[in-house]
Length: 491
Image (cartoon, rainbow, N blue to C red; front, side):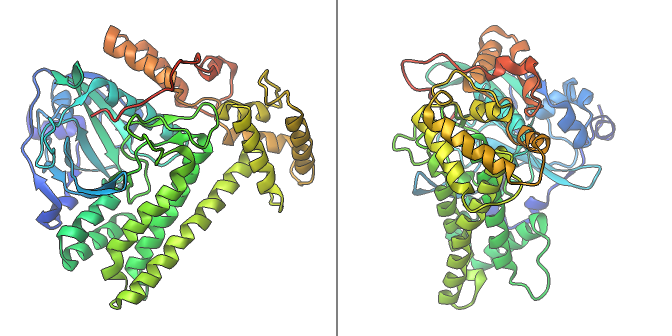
């Protein structure tokens, strides 16, 4: 197949603007072919929005590109360099098992990174094999697409292919490569890397590129780099609030896992909370609970402070003044986050306007949910439909009193009961990717070669605010385990 014919059939329209940045930022690489790639799943709606022909992606040549066996027309493959604080400790990092094949320009003129995850060793692999196992790649596919359907900014998954090769972890596992789509892969850790090992001109080049790509609103007479800091803070405040509102726990909020674009990135030991508990941790490596559900907002602020530190040379010629500007903006994060969070919580309770005691109504409910070990998602779903489940929360005297106060609060707003109900329906998902359902789907593929369980789950998760009874099975809680549910980084 000729390259010209491939463009027509597949639709690759790649640019490489990141490759035009200083060479410090990346390493250009040759592809690292695999033995016998096989397509597991392709995301048809995403492919179409990118201007790609999904049928062509399923062809032999299409799969070869998704497996890293063939370079599409216009691609300049590279691995990005970055650093980061991992559990508070600074380290040199980089794309240790990923390859950026280029930036797809869509029919609407939008630009998206196309990255192969699990594509083999790079100079940043730090002793690893650069490969990925099928289970973790399917996990990222499922959860990232669920997050997109929930309306949460996220990287997305275009496809997963198996490699025909085993990856050795605790045991031999089937290898796989996932094609990840992102607004970009610029991270807080990217700025940390350039701040540590680059010069001010290289730092300025990265900041200017980031502004042009993600925040083109900075005009003349504006401190462009202060504007960059402000906008990144705003996007992260919105993102973390959305996480908290659906009970999502990222699991490894290192600075290299915070995207400047404001997308959720790097789905390793992530999971969704069942029983409401601020201390919920799923990650097997987070032994001290640094990244627990209740800590996510404060960790985001900490990460943003590290980002602000990298921008100091650009914020002002006077170091003291630069520090003052940065500190002022970081202090704004909590305010912006809280505004987004409480607005979202009001919507979950059907409240259109604001009253002084709203926060106590919200906090009282959450306190009771934690006390009675109530399921986070199902509690709000039951409130949406004014159902009293058989949980100990709903049968308690505390809840009865709270419900009277909530109903009285609803009656004081101009909007009708029907309007409140509609608002709650659109704010409280009927289903989330329950951990046991995700594991069930992955196990069916990996151990039995059965794709039907995953396909049904993905179909259900594609419309999480559809409250029809046909999805009730996906709302059931897992059986109680002898030990807490644990997730792993999937390396």
